[in-house]
Structure formats: C-alpha cells, structure tokens
Length: 366
View (spheres, rainbow, N blue to C red):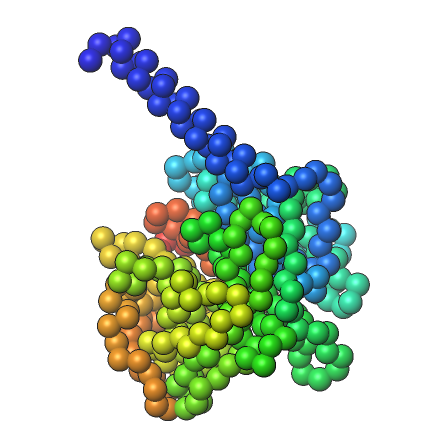
C-alpha cells in the first residue's frame, strides 16, 4: 500500500469514527434539553456513553442525566494524588470540612477525569454539588444552571420517614451502573418486598416499578426482601449479563439482568457469604494476567480480591453460615478505602480515609 492510499484509508477511518461517535451522541441526547438541572440531592454516580453522567437523586426520587461535554478520549490516566481532598473541597465551597460529605467518586472512562458527588451541609438544607478533577488535580464545580440534561422519576420510591433510626427515602438509590443501554438502579421501593433493582432504558422516557429482589442471607440464616443492594457490578455468567450484588453482612448474589422487569419478583442466587458485621462500600471488575477479578471495598473487612470467572460454579448458599462460596484475598496494605473505581487497565482510583483526612489516590490494581 503506498503512502497516499494509506493516508486516505486512515482519513476515512477517522471520519467514520467521528461520524459514529456523533451518531451515538445524538442518540444519547435526543431527550435532553438545555436548562438548570434540578437536584434535591446528589448521591450515586455512573457514566454512560459520550460523557453522559447519571446522578442519583434519592431525595427527589429521580435520576438526572447530564451532558458533561467531557468526550475527549485518552488511552491512560495520569497519577491522581490529592491529600485531604475533603479540606480542599470545603475551601472551594466556602464550608468547613465537617460540613462536607463525599457521596460517590467515579472516573469518566473516556477522559479519565474524576467526578465527585458532594453534600454541602448535612441537614435538610444540604446543597448537592458535582465536582470534577482534571489530570493536574484541579478541582472545579460542574455548573448545573444551564446544562444539557434529562431526568426520569422513580415511581415507587419509599416515603419520607421522620424520626427513627433511618429514612428509607434516602436509600431510594444505593448504587447505579450503565449496562447495555440501560441504567441499572439498586435501592429501596415502597413495595412489600422493598429491596429493588430496576432497569431504565436510556435515552430516558419513563421508569416503571422496580423488580423486587428476594435473597437468602447466609449470616442471618433466612430469606430476606427488605435490605437494599449496597453495591454491584455487571458481569456475564454463561454468556448472559448478570448483576453481582453485595449486601450488608455480606452475601454476594447473582441476579440475571433479563429478569429485571417492572413489578417482577426475582429470587437471586446467593453464591457467597463473605462475613457478617460488615457493609460493602464499592466494587469493580478488572482483568489481570488474562483473568477477571472483583475488587470490593468494605467497612470493616478491608479490600477483598476474588476471582470472577467461575464464580457461579459454587453451590448456592441456602443454610446459615459465617462464610461460604468463593474464596477471597484481603489486600493487607489497602486500609480505609471508602470509594473505588477503575482508572485504567492497571490502576484504580481510591478515596481513602486516613484518620479523618480523605485522600484521593491512584493505586495499582492488586
């Protein structure tokens, strides 16, 4: 192939890729409009196609899709190292560190920039904020006053409950992910079986009721329907997309995505019991040495690494037990991890609590 022909081919490929990206972005943004993105709260975050950021608003019982305009791809990320990011966020927002609550941290898979949902204040008047961290570590607020966005309401969110130990409305959305054109949302509903998973097509039109989820909780020795999924990843089992969902105290459950129909009652398969007195915080799937692994941060059991391939080959947990199913390794030098996301093929981004100081760090995948 001569140089002219090769250059022509490259140009055509580049134009084709650009047209494909433009068509994909157009499809993603057909229901979006310019204006103020109204948020009553900002909790769970997830990235979809073309730099679209999904924000979970439990208080408003809604999911807001925001066009960040952040679509320039990079092959690998720089090293993010920000000590005491909670203090820097407080200074940026004109608050004290004790009035800043970091809700979620995610990485844009295209640009590798970091997005953080924050509550400025901790009471009923708390202000939701979305922040962006660039490769140089600069923190800026994502302006929401005039941005391209769309919103979908959750029709069966739990009611506000005054007093008591918890307010179920604040757990309307406990985790989200974009899977095969749909936003998968875990949380609570107002149904008798309150634990809910819902699959909402994007671009948004409307959301139906969630699917009610029943699981066997090994540590408790019984079937349960009211505890929400705390964190999950999407993973193919037998070539079919599944949700691998982790609950408090710590059952790991597989749920076929195909069963997440509006109003359905779904029984998940408990494939592991990872130990009680523990709350899973965040989890990712990554590849290392040609094999897939799951990395899960926990409140009291450190960071667990477990093989993903063959995870469905264990016998379902159907009796009371302290630990059962897939074996895991605890990563001894990772302590205080509150949030994690995949940064690139060899690194994770972690929010680490070090004696009350929140540090944002790049950590090699173990």
